[in-house]
Length: 417
Image (tube, rainbow, N blue to C red):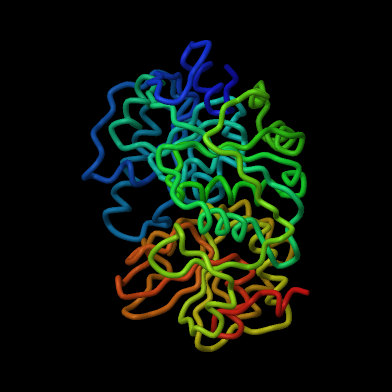
């Protein structure tokens, strides 16, 4: 019987000829990412040995530079762990700083056909590179660091066929909001993306889809390989790999088409992403106190450039705090060289260091009581970005930038024709 991409990878990494829904599979883990939250004193237990330090990556991303005394202690513990085991791939505060999932893309850490683990729930982001990647709990991540293995229950797979091409001012974030609004929860299921429309989506746009698939409660989110992805990885990582394609007779729970050409800007209303997407017109005119672009989903160079195109020659409303957080310092430096940062700053945006920052309510832009935010990040749950009474609307970077200018939620097509 034919297998999906996720099933084929899990079968191979588990030493099996076949893997299907319901199977429990113990698999070899190729990459384990530990981040600063793993080293918090209320979670960390000293690891005495690791099987292969070269499979481990350590990243400080959630609260960097350290936002609290506790986060400073955690980062010191992490530096000790790196020194103890000679971890080569270490991203401390500074030149190589960034959100772990963005660093995976920047450095080609996720090889097609591999298994990648991290404790952050948006680890499925790496699936854009044709691998299986998932967030797991602290005990599982420690076990994987020590043993280079873990286990999964194989879920059923939903396939999304991407067709057409996104109109101007419409983004992959809008495509995700369409899927989340129409098809809802995908708990215990895998999501597989493919189709002719892939060729018109950059790696950054595709990564938005895999990253946001965590909000569908998907187990794994994978992309079918193509030359664009293969060239991206090979340009950043010399290690050999074999792309994994779904079998022609693969069995899916459902195969659904997404017509990119027919999409419009969408907004998720507060407190939920699932089943909560509306045309931007339904939210137009709602006053906002803060606008935020960043996170592992929308802190890419594409996203910052799009925001700059909206803002060029304009000013942010004096009633709005507009915060922009690049996904990595590499992205920041590229945006700096291209003049993107200057455009954002001249318009009145505040550009922060690369970090998770305001997305998870950690630092650099928390919300106060009864405030309203329009965000291009990963989540809009109650209390996610600060006070529980705050309202968080989610849209694309173009929608956020347009709203920052007017002071109310605004259709970005007013500024991008």
